Image (cartoon, rainbow, N blue to C red):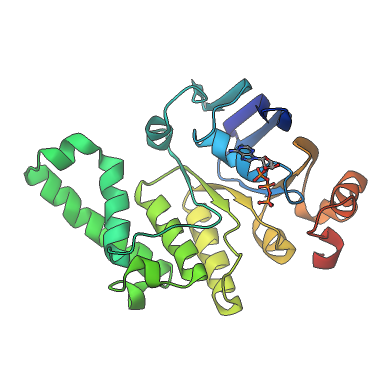
Length: 259
Ligand SMILES: Nc1ncnc2c1ncn2[C@@H]1O[C@H](COP(=O)(O)OP(=O)(O)OP(=O)(O)O)[C@@H](O)[C@H]1O
């Protein structure tokens, strides 16, 4: 494996609150990296900085040889990075299929949308095929004509993944994909993410569900108060003293309960 993404000495503070401090790690091509840590340790902020939603104070973020830490969000998306959110908001007046199709339109850019052409119609046809396939893979075919806002919390998460995949990213970052998802759907999600990974997608996954982490992740990094305290295999987590200290020292998610 070779490094696809490199984060070096990244720091971020909100006012006097130092949320990320000197964070460095890499994501290898084809890797599934778990991002763990107690509540408030800076996991979502780290994803926000990588995806350009939150500007960084210090450090660098690169994809291959390209620095992306100063780029606007749409260019970061174009460089192949997609993400989902912990609590996805969905439009009330669009159907599930329309929301996925709109995510595809966003990835083609405004120019093509404003000046429709034969080429655009072809793109729309291929978007429809891709959206239909993704909805099928993410078990949303039955609800494709419902308003997106009417979906359950778990289904909204799946829809968020479908939208993120419309841009054909090389890195997908998921913020707690299993939270609120019915147990019956979990294995399907694991299998879908495994298949996507086998087809070349690299993943960074924030998750508190240790069964999911062990089943899916090749490696984990653990944040505690904004600093990386472990970078190891999922199997090594339960024996890592700094990890146990991070979780037992005040976090509400107790690692030992999960392992
Ligand atoms: N936009 C913001 N403005 C001010 N403070 C923020 C902002 N975003 C995050 N923070 C603070 O950064 C800290 C880390 O939050 P973050 O959401 O990154 O943690 P987390 O590890 O993802 O937590 P959880 O597991 O509970 O989702 C918190 O103290 C939070 O209040």
